[in-house]
Image (cartoon, rainbow, N blue to C red):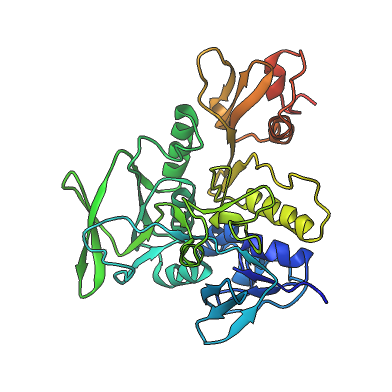
Length: 396
């Protein structure tokens, strides 16, 4: 008798597992599973929604199915429509929810008309229906998601304002110089950028947003507001079932939760104290778990992922960026940095002892493959001059 594997969640991690194994995949969204990383390109009109569909799983996914409860004793999940699905092994790939900031004018999960998170294909399609040339749009949040959303809205002809509470854009990934170059590029797309800027509330009229209020009293007129304030792991199902949860659903090196018959992968999973929230680790976790469930994995099955962030920004002159590891050096670290102002190119690596510990590249990513391999492998660097790391062939 074959093992019944049920996967809850039709995102990157869940679908990857369903491509490797015959499983029952329960997806909450009505759409065919899609690549969330490309949502900004759908919003900008670069891709049609069907273009970002993920490769089909071995067994067709059940769409529009929301799981509301895990019955661990009966080993089954209960769905909102009243049906129950039994399992021998359950995999939680529930992903994450957008963070809704504590602003005046936001009550619970009901958002005023014109206010949208930017997390799902439905969010994307609703924004596309609202945005036309000349519409005033404010994006709250200057991280990876906010920058992507601002670029896409600008491509649609909107008058975009990007607000960031921190000192600089993408401050989690970029150093000060790289962030400054990114800011100049975003401004060249027609986006107005405000950093060190705290949003305090939303103004409404007739249930529709009309403006964004800043803590310093300044008011930004807005017909559309995009909330790009980060995400939180979706842990409700696991918590209600009595599983060990912290920031995410706690898993071991076999991606197993505190219940030996339940696993978790992707944005909802917390491994060794870390929640990644990125596509690369989600895919690695799904592959590792597939090997575990096929009894092919040596132990430990999953030891963590060294995640690289990449972003492509369009415009008359596009900009590619990549960041990995620790971009800010510690005392005693060696730093190699190259800047080409005419080409808007910036490259920097941080070396600690004989190990590459981080780097940032903007505009010229020719060396990123070799640098990423050296960083991911965590191997001793060759004795060649450090500048060799930043040559166009990446030192190969």
